[in-house]
Image 1 (cartoon, rainbow, N blue to C red):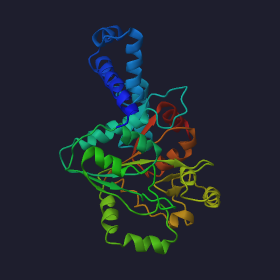
Image 2: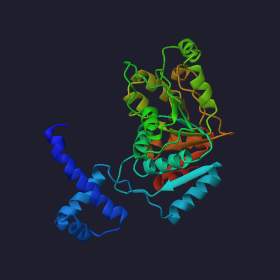
Image 3: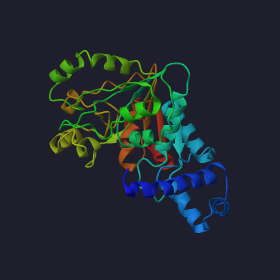
Image 4: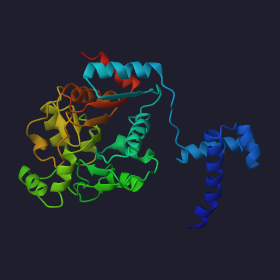
Length: 319
């Protein structure tokens, strides 16, 4: 450890103590200042540092009436098996704030079940933010399986693939998919899926008890395009074909129908697990994602949704 790291460690220790005293023990900042022997201003800064450094994770346990009402209406409107709505921050443009924490809580709830489960996991910014919120928990009885490849076109690891981080935090057996997200041809996809080290992962994904996925938009800043998985020409072709959203690479239109041909012929991801025998939860929010979320719900590509108030209200207002 270098000298700068050594210098910073005591401050983080103090921040952790201040965060614990404030959020867990319920002390005021004046009480924290007295107990730590610092000024009130220093105590306030230490509490803020504990949050900014990720030493403290706050989850809201109080049910908010409007969120509960929206969740109930979403459940009825789209025949959902799970719906959760978190408060919206009117000043935030984040597409993960609030729902990442809610997804983490839902994943943890499943991981704490004693009976063995197969949990399938997608990829993307929302799920990455959620997995970073997970508290470490030992659950070797469960299996984690990736729905999508973890290799980018240049051969590097996909930044938003979360299976390895999740496995580290849970100690569950993990089954990654060592494939590109999109391959060069349908024939290559079939050949790869027949490989002895890939076939069991695809088969296990089909048996998932619970699945968590994100929904990517297909606008000018589509994640598939921005992350280098498809070209600008391929994106425009998908848009022309009616694509408004994608789940683990599978592009679909406003009615939730998978786009025929185009990059869908070359997606190496496992099919989305059955919604008839399992729970498939989408985590998504924001205006850009609205058409994709609506399409996924309309076609029942997913039967669970974690979103925020604004998105929920917009979904219910849609015709």
